[in-house]
Length: 192
Image 1 (cartoon, rainbow, N blue to C red):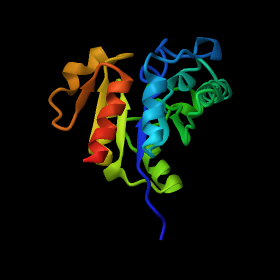
Image 2 (cartoon, rainbow, N blue to C red; image 1 turned 135 degrees about the horizontal axis):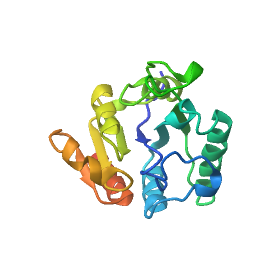
Image 3 (cartoon, rainbow, N blue to C red; image 1 turned 30 degrees about the vertical axis):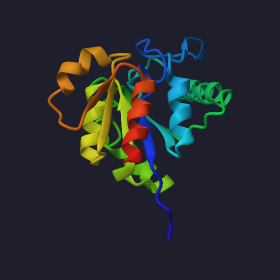
């Protein structure tokens, strides 16, 4: 029997790195304060670290999937410098309204849809009941609800401050000032 693992699903832009509206170059990749400490804490407590990110900049023609992969690879390299291993990165390059060509589709991977989470569960044997999501947008929280992940956390970084009012009516939501604060809550909840 396969052992199920716990994971933290992580939004990328505005949660892990500075949100620069459609990051299209590795030169603009800048980690947010407390992210290293928070990821290290989660990793030390046995959580898989999985990035799930909407990247409609690809659909809109602002950058290619190849450029996106370079940014994602650079992010992993930056974190490895601190001995932090990202288990997997999933992204949705689609947009049903603003997409161009093959990217203009109503897909099952664009948050708040749970296609990226379903794929991660299949590929990494994840127990969603012991997992969490950290993001800075309503779609991250809605994704957690749709996937029945018990601990959705909104961080006030990135676009988080703009979304506090939108998510405050959700009972299970936790709102944190920093990524490290979110990581501490996840570890504490897991130890209960």
